[in-house]
Length: 411
Ligand code: FAD
Image (cartoon, rainbow, N blue to C red; front, side, top):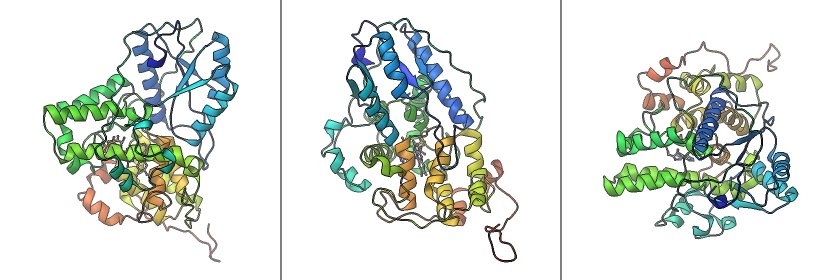
């Protein structure tokens, strides 16, 4: 927006994510869709205060943007740099058919590309050397929100549908920048949850232990640079401790996966990942369906999957436990799990989701070659009194993992 602030008129466009069949799944879970619709409605409200609006296009950017650019006689067209193979291809296809050059702006990461002490193509393939190379580097300053914008051209702005479901009381976050800023202020300066973050971040329930900022970060309603600046301000004006530093450390994980996704491109979706490390797996549709529905022989996993389906949320620890179950107890191709998370997570972001799944499956950035969590031990550590399991209805009747007929054929 800032780049276009001096124009005579400005058309702001959002292209609705394309529903692409992948791993037997399509579409968006109802909570993820609800959060996205609220975020767009919130952006429209904020823009209306500046005399602007948001054009929500229902087709692919490579079809919609050139059409719109021609219709309004655009002299400049810009987009933001987001990681992902399909996103990169869409940018290239848009650029190829636009009547003017496509301007690509960064801003979705802590550091501007020019700040990195290495060329992106040479970035470390593992997190620790990546973090070490960034030691002492200050994140880029956040952009200021615009106070004035050029008016929109004369076009009909399509209406936005209303969400089909309500926020769940167990994770009642609302989409949009205002709600994101409120949560950031409240968690850092208000309740000062950040001071205990290192000890509480593995809590399984939402809002209780970690910042829960990821849904707003994923949609760009909050900028990661704003989060870093707010934490830095807290450290200078209030106090700094191990927990405040740990939050910045976690933001570096996001940075790592975003940078890696720009480099890894299509191999982010390959079973063997970027290193081309083949992981043996099977595919039992029945076991995948049981995992998705939360109907396994692991009460904690069931509870986590019910939480995800109802709220669109799962904590970081929960994601690791549920993923380990799919990978190690059922030996299923990691991409099926990643696709299911993609469908349902409010904070779905291609780089963090696929990067973390590859890491856990041992085909990504993990030097140890994958993680296998002991589900019994995880239950004892993170839900010793089974409160979480009971809350999310995790107990299910025992079923044999692999049902076979009399001749030992899988049923
Ligand atoms: P906090 O603990 O408060 O951390 C603050 C911020 O740091 C987060 O909001 C996030 O932006 C970043 N962060 C923390 N941990 C990670 C991590 N491991 N990787 C990348 N960034 C991190 N995160 C997403 O944003 N989108 C996803 O689609 C996603 N999918 C995941 C899938 C799996 C299998 C796993 C194990 C993790 C995934 N994560 C994903 C990372 C992490 O689980 C979430 O970022 C975190 O749980 C969000 O909660 P929070 O905002 O309270 O995080």
